[in-house]
Amino acid sequence: MQPRYYSISSSSVVTPRIAHLTVLVAPQALSQSTLEVIPGLATTYLLQSTKQFTVSESTFNTQHPSETIPIPPKGKIFAFTRRSKFKLPISATCPLIMIAAGTGLAPFRAFIQERARLKDSSRDIGQMILFFGCQHPRRDYIYADELREFEARLEGKLSIVNAFSRLDKEKKVHVQHKLMEHGQTVMDLIDQGANIYVCGRTDMARDVAKVVLELGVTLGQRSVSETESRLDSMRKARKWQEDVWG
Image (cartoon, rainbow, N blue to C red; front, side):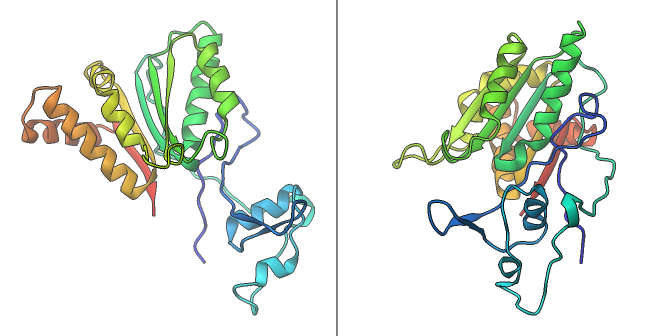
């Protein structure tokens, strides 16, 4: 079985001996006081290790009765880390455009933590804008309070733009729509040498790339081929990075 990889959602500068993970489990309510976890693999395994829920062995075996996923003993899990290429630029003053949906927020939480620590140390940091998409602000807006605190703490260096796809029954708003809405800001940051990071599902990343291409043509006043060439150069220079799945 292949290992399941997760993006670490904490900065090694801030918590060098502790790694935070941001994962999604799919609970279904059996009653007002009972939750059963819909069977999965690594995420269910991690959930059991937190001891926040009591997950019976039968929960693990619903889909595959002949197989048993061992419940981790005493909160310990079998895991390892590997070096990621999805990381902050060397220069702390480099602007960042971060685009995420759902648990794709994980690496950007770490990025913001690290930039906040640098600012607390009187270091100059670049402008950051985070486009984050989820269904509803009261349902799955993860780290909402923490992000608002960072936005205030960073005193104008961080802007958070939310896209909620289930807030209005008539209209679904996704991160690519917000990118278009804030197109001039995005292009200004790109012209200032910003790094673009995209984390989430593959189809979201594909739509984001289309929007940035359109912005380069309409606002950057370049031809399609010129804009495509510019974006390709950014990817080759690792100024455009993606961590996508699905």
